[in-house]
Amino acid sequence: MSSSEPIMKLRGVVKAFPNGTLALRGVDLDIEKGKVHGLLGANGAGKSTLIKILSGAYWATLGEITWRGEQVKWDSPKAANDMGVATVHQHIPLAPTLSILENVFLGKVGWWRRSSSIRTQFDELCQRVGYSLDPDALVENLSIGERQMVSIFQALATGADLIVMDEPTASLASDERELVYETVRRLTRIENKAILFVSHFLDEVIALTDQVTVLRDGMAVLRAETRDLDEGKLAEAIVGKQVIALEREAAQRRPLETDDVAPRLRLRDLASPGRLHPISLDVAPGEVVGVAGLLGSGRSELLHAIYGSDRFATGTVTLDGVQLARSPRAAVAAGIGLVPEDRMGQGLVPDFEIWRNTTLPALGGVSALNALPISERERRRGWDAIEKLSIKASSPEILVSELSGGNAQKVTIAKWLFSDVKLFLLDEPTAGIDIGAKTDILRLVRELASGGKSVIVVSSEFEELLAVCDRILVMRDGRCIAERNFDETSEHDLLLLAGGQSATITSAPAAPATQSVVGPQS
Image (tube, rainbow, N blue to C red; front, side, top):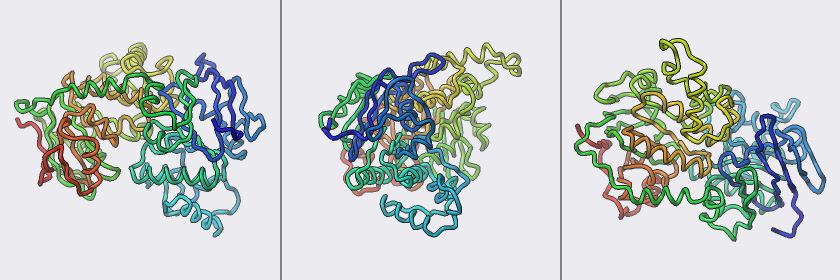
């Protein structure tokens, strides 16, 4: 560690909850000004608890926190903020019905909304970050990436000396990630801020941070200078050899033979005005099809058009030979389950328990006469979900809002596992979660395929698509511009295709000239 005095020091920090959970078991942490300190760990390792302690949302049960040389114990996020600690949260707690300007300066009081000086401050923030936003735009109309940038602006507007960034790039496109990186570098190198950077992207941790702490089971198992580490050492500290095993399995997998198999899913000229150009596609039983593309490429729009939640979509969707009506109700009844990108906003009821979330799509299986839910069956379903997906929760009575990001994502998938789902639509199923939970979910995708289910996976992590998919479609500007078998391409090739760069793709045939991307024929 640097010989300079840390702006914040944690010594022996313990957090125990009334239900007996011991989330932190004596954590030491030093954060220095002018440095980016990376914090990593699997879901349930204690990262979220530690962040809440630093932000004033929780008190530490035991241990000491020293801030600017003085021992502190703030009792609210406002107290921490007033002392110079700002947090950029993973789930972006903004006020959707307010404007960007109102959100950025939400903590200010008085008649500031009518002040021209506040707009001048906002313009200065845009210049500092190198990213322009319309100050009068409503947050509810922004993309997830834009909301993340508003949250960063909000933290910077407080003038904090320590900024805690909890997965700030998890939902961003590559160009937006670069903006965050440049902002982080500018804040530390030029403005001498301290940043605690929580991320599950090992490559960005290696490239961006100066020091790293890895938590496992509530303890700091690795504290080191980043220059002494590589991705392999970080992965092993977090979860051992799981990632290596997953890549080995992908290397040994053979291409799926689908020539003589009737398609499970058949799309014909599926389109949505202004969102998705006509696409035709067949997906076989037991096949995993990946959808690669950058933010705004039409990836999610394709899934919502299939699911029937895009009421403007045209074309036909056929499942096992039956053409579906255009509604989510018809899709679910036919056997299609959607895991949306916004898991808390669209995939879960945060204030419901695990058992209640997992039983929502298939109440008939836990009810008498398909009408009267039986409490014992519902809670048994919750326990089954916890055991099947290794959800880190002491009981199914835990509220989903209290789970870590990876465990909440497992619940969004688990709720479809107990009904007759034939086609799973997974939109960024590993976004914002750590390597351990990510590996669990990717293994589950292969298990579903082995059991005869069909899966379509949208992901910004092309390496993951190569690890689990049989073939991959590349989307750009609402069009499917290429199709590749998993063993005929690489992450580099997919990035070039998705980014629209002119390059010779040597490991795969040329992209099809038409919009039709048709798999196995009946």
